[in-house]
Structure formats: C-alpha cells, structure tokens
Length: 326
Ligand code: SF4
Image (cartoon, rainbow, N blue to C red; front, side, top):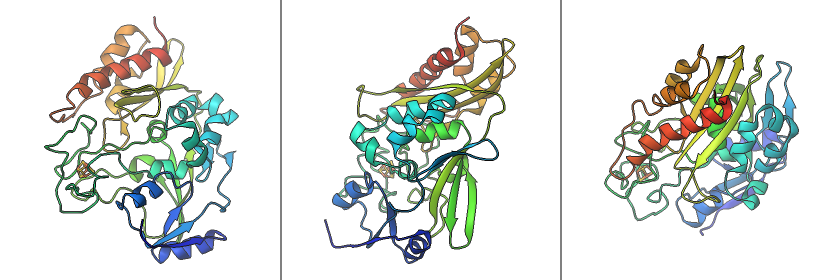
C-alpha cells in the first residue's frame, strides 16, 4: 500500500465537492481496495460515501423500479419487488461473487467494477487500460476468458458484472448527480466500449456520482431469468451468461429483452435475437434459430473461440427456460 487521504462525506454536496477536487468515491470497497493493494490504482484521496441517503429501493411514479446506488447486492437480490417482478436481477446478483462480498458490495460499485483481465492486474504487464499506450498483453497472450464482441486493437477485456447484464437487458437508466445537477443516461450508453481509449470505461463527468439505477415500467409483465456458465459453480466470473425477459401472450412472443455477459467488452445486448423472437410462437425451433443470431459480429481470439458456440447454446437454453417448450 502507499499513503493516501481518506475522508468521509457528510452529505451529497460534501461528496460532490470532494469528487470535483479529484477524490475517488468508495462505498463497499470490494474492488477498489484490492486494486489499491496491487497498486493497479493509486488514488490520492478516497471519499467514503457510505452514509449518503442512497439506500432505498422504490417504485417510481412512472411505475419503474429505482434501486439506490448504495443498496447492497444482497439487499437488492432479496427485495420482494425485485424477486417477484425482475427475477433476472435477483438471479444475476445471487450468482455473483460470494455471500460475504454481496453483503458489502453496492449496486453502484457493482456496475463500476473493473475488468478481471489478469494482465490488467499485473502491473508488470503491458495494458492500455491501466497504462494507456503501453500495449495489450492479452492480444497475443492467454486470452481464454476475454471478449469476442466489442473488442478493439487496444483492449479485449470483458466487463465482469452479472447485474449489469440484467440491467442492460431491461434497458435500465443510470441516474447521476454532478455539480451541474442530475441527469439520467441509458445503460447502453453508460459503459463504454474500449475503442482507442480503454482507460475510459464509463460516461461519467468529473466528480459525478451514481445515485441510482432505474428499471423502466413494463406495462406487459415480463417473465425473466439469468443463466451463468463458468468454470466452477461458485465464486467465479462468467465464461458466458445471458439475461432473458419475455412477454408471451396469446401464444406469441410480444416483447423480448436479451443481453449476454462474459463475451463483450460491455454487457452485450442482442437485438438480432430479440427481433427474431418478436411475433413468433414459442417453440424449440424458434429458440434454436434465434440463438444462432447471438454471436453476430464476434471476433474470437486464439484461446476463446469456444465462446462463439457456447454463447449460442447459453442463449438457446435460457430462452427455453424462460419461454417454455412447445
Ligand atoms: Fe489491458 Fe485490456 Fe489488454 Fe487486458 S485486454 S491487457 S485490460 S488492454
């Protein structure tokens, strides 16, 4: 470790002021403290925001579900409305990390967490995300767990969050507060693909604070679920995962929301799969045909070619689980 300043924000204004001066927000600390120990991150000032009033889960006037940024992962997973209305979120959270980490980590921190690329965490390795311009050791290194979608010459790291995949599928909004006031940003625009600047990961302005994520109301009830495929059944990141939410009425798929994890540099929405489903009658054939669209545009690396087929099979299986078999 190295010397740094630690302050505790007494209120939101206090936090924003500290953030404007370059302070890094910390709440559960389950990612940032690890990275500081490994000297991957070296913030000069930490601003503890744990006491800010951002720990509520509420149904909004518009009928959406608003989850405060400081709600713990375990709290969100166990919340009655989340469990009953959006089981895909509960399942994604419960398949993440360990019970101890879920009791500490917050929703805001979860979507902000940084990649598990081993080269990113090895300060002796070339890594454009950690050290812009230094190169990318994963391109010609061991890249079995890396991304096949949304990659660039600069970076091929996956985004590690499971909850973010569910939020992407449900087309959530991220609510932010900054010196110039509040704004909401679609989840699809919040996390950035690497392009030539993989060190820039979120569309946050200096000092902005995540206050909540909001899942829009769905007038038609969605049946949903999350499937995660990994090397071991506990405490492991996804090789592939998929969040599926469907509305089926009168024997026809009326709405479809599908996103994948473990394969993209950001949680990967699958619009081609969604389009193939809409207006069709559920059947094994439909699930199989729709899943074939899942890896559209994939650019596998030397060691992760298996993810192309695994992604299709993961999508097919979860469509069948959520949509039923006919
Ligand atoms: Fe760094 Fe990204 Fe390359 Fe990993 S894949 S070494 S995070 S630049």
